[in-house]
Image 1 (cartoon, protein in one colour):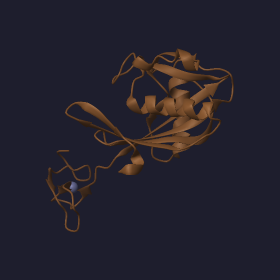
Image 2 (tube, helix red, strand yellow):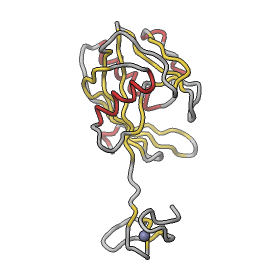
Image 3 (cartoon, rainbow, N blue to C red):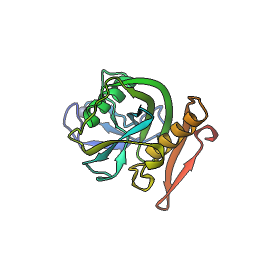
Image 4 (cartoon, rainbow, N blue to C red):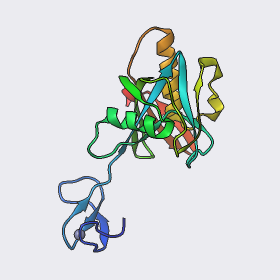
Length: 189
Ligand code: ZN
């Protein structure tokens, strides 16, 4: 950040009194600009035993497969955000079910919140951010072409729970060190 979004004067990084981290502070109007993690809401959609995946038409990970997910907007619940993303990316009208996973993507400053979901109507399509949408049986899922580690984590836990006839909530922290992904159990942090 270079300029204050409140008064358009230049900002500088400093630790405000009583705080413990550097923030962008505007000397002109006194506004402190906090940058905190953003929430990505998504869902694993099941229909007739298969899972609905979308091939990404946008970067990052253009051409890779993902579950519908995206940034939560102001004024909506996280469940609504997940359902809205399903509509936008897969033209899928979904019923949001239980909470599947919370993945902290530390370096990206994101928290991914994933729900289980089902199709309310047996139809779906291809939204503007997708190249293709299709239902995959468990054994057909293109694991090497899954776009993100958080999505792979959610899909694997979903399938594992389904085999065991349960619906649990799973945690994961994803960080990077020396260009390598480090996955840890969120409970142990
Ligand atoms: Zn200002």
